[in-house]
Image (cartoon, rainbow, N blue to C red):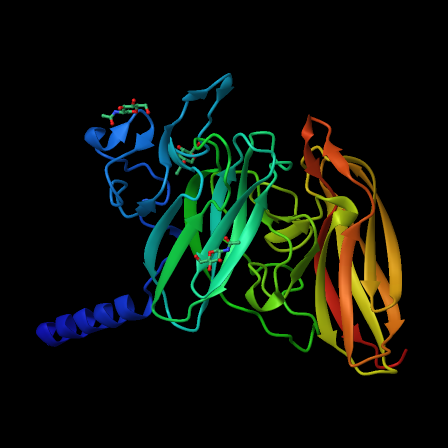
Amino acid sequence: MKATLMLLSVLLCATFHLSFSFIDGLVANGNFELGPKPWALNGSVVTGGSHAIPEWEISGFVEYIKSGQKQGDMLLVVPEGAFAVRLGNEASIKQRINVIKGMYYSITLMVARTCAQEERLNISIAPDFGVIPIQTLYTSSGWDPIAYSFKAESNVAELVIHNPGVEEDPACGPLIDSVALRTLYPPRPTNKNILKNGGFEEGPYVFPNTSWGVLIPPNIEDSHSPLPAWMVESLKAVRYIDSAHFSVPQGTRAVELVAGKESAIAQVARTVPGKTYVLSFAVGDASNSCEGSMIVEAYAGKDTLKVPYESKGKGGFKRAALKFVAVSPRTRVMFLSTFYTMRSDDFSSLCGPVVDDVKLLSLRRP
Ligand SMILES: *[C@@H]1O[C@H](CO)[C@@H](O)[C@H](O)[C@H]1NC(C)=O
Ligand SMILES: *[C@@H]1O[C@H](CO)[C@@H](O)[C@H](O)[C@H]1NC(C)=O
Ligand SMILES: *[C@@H]1O[C@H](CO)[C@@H](O)[C@H](O)[C@H]1NC(C)=O
């Protein structure tokens, strides 16, 4: 009897391992705390070949950066642990990750710009790639956690992080730290909400120890969004925030519109022309010293509602609703912030109003 049970549990364990190939969190040596052997480094430059950094395959001019290292007058700060990497011109780091074919995943990584004003990263998981601008306008530390997502086309995902830039100084280029992965479960509409993921509860991995949220970069298609069902339109990112570090109107996650009219979140809903609908949502502040008069503009097709919100930067929210008659079988729902706002405790960090708990319902008796 005991033996049978043992065998059973061994079998169960085996199946468990097969079906759960990845647990959300850092990828192997995702924080680069395991570094090259001393002989594989010349100063900070990794010279020991493509496998010098454990778990990663590197190519080109890659530097292994220790916290506190200086570059000119600039102190290079490492956001987590004591080490990070820097990708010089055309340099890349690569790792193969076991995933499940057909599932959606989101990658969160911390990046910082160093010399160039406009640095970019090409994050790819074949056959997809995304070129993400690194602007560092969002956190005073200079480090921004950014998210990218993909659908696994096979059971092994080859993640490549590449600096496509060519600067005069090969030692320029983005710093990378803390590469994490999370499985996404794209939500479905319910009879309580025509919109999907209206509370933003499903989204990218948020580092438990950082209070910066995660940036969802612009120009992401909804089929591959790290914020499932939502698109980030226009030029700049939106910030995904968690209730452990911010004030969130409902549930444990929300979105902060950090780039004024330059960034918007949108979703296209199925609607019946001639029917009346109500788009309801919460507008608030993240309790991150983002103070002042804010306005969130909500759009449902051609109808719009401007919701003013006076923020004291200490958290809080109000609810608003936009009633409209659908004019087509698809209605685009969109939110943006009218103004730019800077944190009152840090004039180099953009912030803005929070949107959460977005619901779209048809009215039976308008
Ligand atoms: C280390 O780098 C310096 C400067 O680029 C170079 O002069 C030197 O030859 C390198 N040392 C080794 C052992 O490769
Ligand atoms: C980004 O990387 C992918 C895969 O390595 C490549 O096919 C694509 O051309 C790159 N795009 C840019 C703009 O560098
Ligand atoms: C997270 O923060 C706690 C408390 O500040 C610290 O003890 C711990 O080492 C941190 N963990 C990581 C992974 O940085």
